[in-house]
Image (cartoon, rainbow, N blue to C red):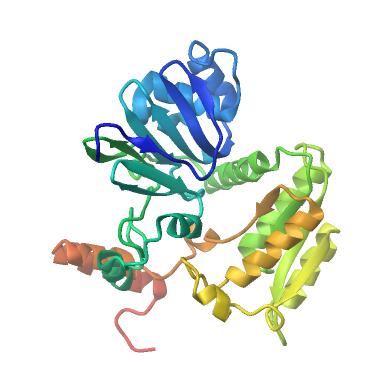
Length: 357
């Protein structure tokens, strides 16, 4: 990159303080009150979420992003150190893509926008190989020269190069011990209530995906309880479900709608296909993209500002029985004993014990 780094932004939002400015912010911060105490000397009278992100960076550098609890992505221009800093929350809920070539940095929250702006069409073979082997590749996209900000990481781009740093790690060694199983249930319910509650801090209508399964039904039930009890600012809740002919889920969907007393919108997968020819040719084809587009239209019609989903709930709650990625990860590191132990534990959970089913 050249000594003078030119910065262009596709999503423009600027919050400025001495020596640094936020060029882009997308997301929500859930621990604002805690951050006010920690960062009051750095906020300069601006209490917005972008200002909190900038203050955290000014006080602690990129490691300070760990204090921002919520769903977010941010781009900061550091004029003092001549850096462009991009970062994403621990789960990567708000994607952020970037390209740094010829002294120019471009970014966007939409891959298609960046592909169109850069004109890049060459495929990234490393991404394709990792996708086929592992199902994904952190910090890469299908397009050579266009990258993604890894979850829980910051990317610092300067005239001398690009540096990627981790600011969050999964707390796998942290343990919580209670004297009774009932206490674990209470704590899980408390955390689940908090997780849903922080996403309902708006008076605008709320839309929730409802499949009739355990995960989405739990989210809808909790959101409905919080709204009806007045525990959150949100005032109304509607659900959206994907249905097809002779769907086994539909009776459960209607039961949940009746139980919660909410209005449900059903989108037929016959009328809206899982994947269309048009979407297959986009920068990042996704099997559910046409359905997501319909949900976007519905959200605008309802003026909803929040979309709740139960996706990945099985994985988070320990109901995901496919442990192949963990076993294969050990094999790739040539830790054959560890892989065998993981495979044995996996088989015991499934009660297969190496026998054919």
